[in-house]
Image 1: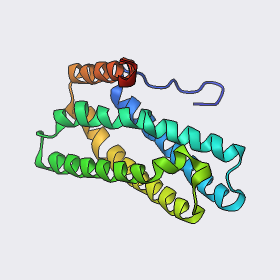
Image 2: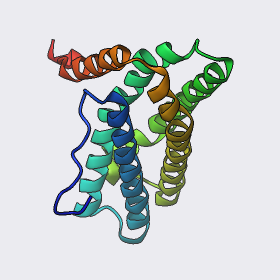
Image 3: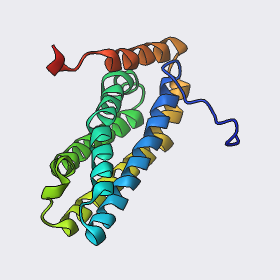
Length: 177
């Protein structure tokens, strides 16, 4: 579609489309993270760096967490027993999630307090590793999982996934209880 008439973003009625759209946003935030790392090596921590760090930290601390929950709690269980190949794929994707979670634990404290980053080159290594892990993982999900899921899941199952995704995002944060 043209820029004058942008394509409407998927909503919870299209949960697989929403997961794909989330992948695009993740890739965009990975690009911001990599640009941030380069910027900090050249210019240090300035106003732009603080804003970018906050944006990336907020996104991967909230939306990306929901995204992994959507997959692990709602999508994967419906597909894992369908074929041995799908079970192997899902097992690998869950392992990817564990690696991504560890990479996030390594970099999140730095993004939370960028002015405390002592070694910008080490931050760049961690940022590039995190972004590369996400790019590889998203490619697998987009190319090997989501297209198959579209053909394997019934409209009722897709509706259930969408409903669970919506409810997950409407729950109050635990600290608000």
